[in-house]
Length: 424
Ligand SMILES: *Cc1c(COP(=O)(O)O)cnc(C)c1O
Image (cartoon, rainbow, N blue to C red; front, side, top):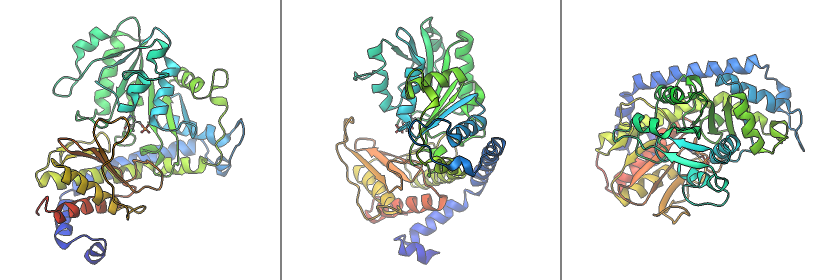
């Protein structure tokens, strides 16, 4: 084994350091195995209940009327997530698009949108119009309110109560921290927040941005009162096989409203050819609990490796996980670059290229990104990125197999060691 790792550029010292850390994680890993087993059964049960068959893997074209595979898959998602309905479509281009459809479909001019969990994901700022943007909700007369989290990362219930008013139509809750330093929320915490909001205003629609959260726990936000739950198929639920897509699961009326934005009023979910991608969407969803488990093991391994070496990590080495993202504060530009170059060098695709910091549109500093993925931009595949500014934190996620995630982290460490940024 060690020899093979040596061929992949991992020194004996790095291998041994990794082994010690891995050996200490047996119990943690067993818990992930159990969660994955539970979720695997949930998915299989939904597939059997809905009589998934060879006929579901056919390709529709044109309008895509009566696409059995599409309709059955949407029911499989709905049953897995315990919702009345679900849209699962290759026409949904990404997570941001799915969230935008859900928002535009369910909000009307004069309504207020409330985020009780602070600033939403960067790309939503333009959807909502927090940053002025053509075609934003703000342009259509939808107002936005935000209540920041308290300093310790918990909900500011007092100010949330004040922010909910007669115009509040939809409350958006982002489960994962994304690229922020706040903690990600557990499903249980999200449930408590939803109950609180519904007590103030029972008819408010509670939407959860579930990106990176699917199958991390045995329950999902839809099990604790979320009316709408949204995610991307090039993250957890696509299982690495979905080449494109997003989902919107939830109450039937809310999902239908979203469908009139996905296509158009009148047509809704009745159209949308699947062009032959159904099989990958099914197979990806089938594998998703296991793929998510591998990514979680990688995240915990990274946290333990880098915490042991003295770097601040979020979540820390022992905290429970709510999503697959791991932040490591490397403290120096050289550290951030070395980390990302190591991840890239471990990839099955494009391992021979060297990531460099660049001026990415929409960011106020240079950004470095590492990704050697089969699907462009897929972040359920091993990937890492970070802004080139203090504190030089890297956000690391994914790995289609635990073994690959492990290689990526060892390789990142090897680069750090070779550049004399850490010593073992
Ligand atoms: C990834 C992500 C999104 C946006 O998804 P894209 O597919 O990149 O558009 C939104 N919210 C959160 C929390 C995410 O992690």
